[in-house]
Image (tube, rainbow, N blue to C red; front, top):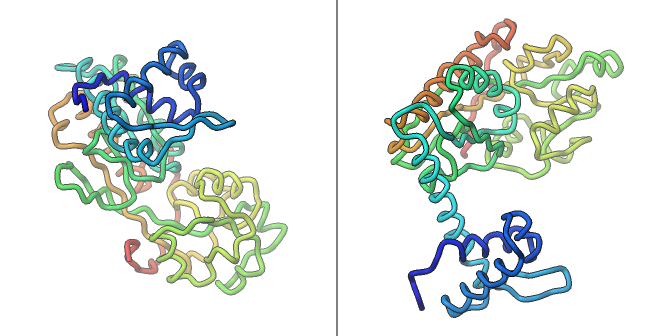
Length: 316
């Protein structure tokens, strides 16, 4: 086996793995299809294994082909991080790859990023919206806003506080269907909730028995889809309380009975602490997100005092 294998071969292998055919991979990578085919064949020859088999729908990865995927993806993430670092030494310029949950990324981060780029025009942001945890150690992202405590020791992590999740409905829905006075009355309403259960959602269901998958009229694992349906008046759903305060048409329901705390963290790899572009982004996120959690950001309007929380640990 030849261990001195060109990165281009792995890059083409990943392209085919992600896109399912030589032609689709070539289009995505901006190279000729025969080039991708030669790369895959050369990689198979040098590794001594078969990576793909032909099928009517395209190329299907073999078991060996799938086994290489996480290692090739780590190589891609490292190559991308090296490129970002090489273009931004000593000044606030270059690219910072930032990952966050869907709601935070779409609803909270835009004004923070806008202010950053107004101050630092040479700064570029890659924003990855995902409720899946990106691996900072393998440089899948430079900085992460997480709703769970980081567990990797080589990270700089700051606990920003807790964001409260409350039950809300659009005023239009409540006018048409009425406002539930008890948790049991939720079972007579259209509820917007999750499809696939996570540890946090399992803990929420245990704390609030009426908030379970079988009771939902609309199910989606996209937080943005749930928020859109909530704003459309489709039913009752969970929303971050500081976010709901911005819209007077979103009315909180049963605040004393339905309150879920969600920890919020900011993290980056410790090797990036002295990189100017990452330092300014980390500091801006720290300030902006704490203002959001405290209800003092410019995008928020003051709301009523927070009710007592139903306490539970989301990782149990």
